[in-house]
Image (tube, rainbow, N blue to C red):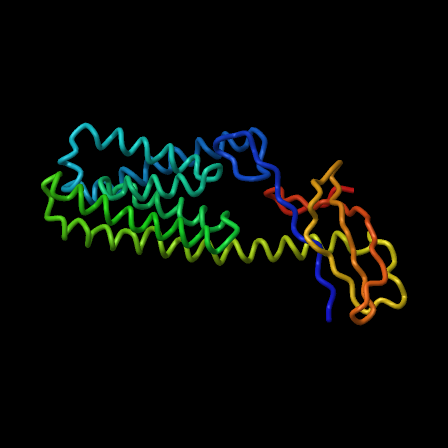
Length: 247
């Protein structure tokens, strides 16, 4: 059997409301500003296409659109909450549909377990259909059945499909990160016992310190444990221009 790689470490949580895990620096604020302008343009563009629906909202449409922009800017810090909030908002204000797609992609990419992803995406899709069914007759744009159908179309195109794409991208990113961790460990671990036929690296429960990841290595000869070694390896980080290793 082949040796398993050391696990990918969890990036630190950023303090900024507009940053994802491990992201920091002034560039995050500039990125948020650019995204805010882009999001506003997308909302205005979509508003032109669905103005017949949102005309019933009169002054509330602008305020709800601003709320949608705020949610999409905070999607990296609170991915699940933002995609659910935008999905609920989309049932009443379809112009935030494109923003919901962006948030669904980010949430699916960041959430680590399939149970979380499925729960968030299905919950967001159901919420879109529910709010659509409730708001359509209230706004006078159609029956509850019409709102439910419109919500179903929006849910599939702006929640489910971007979520599937984000899931695939997230799995690929985690795989590449695990491979980088294994490459970082190569050459930094002590020699294996000559009699060892395989070595395993279980999940590191200790927190990284000083830019180094604690590793516990269990070496076996056939089914017999013959050595337990503890050592540290450089922790791999993921800056946006490419990955580096702390020595």
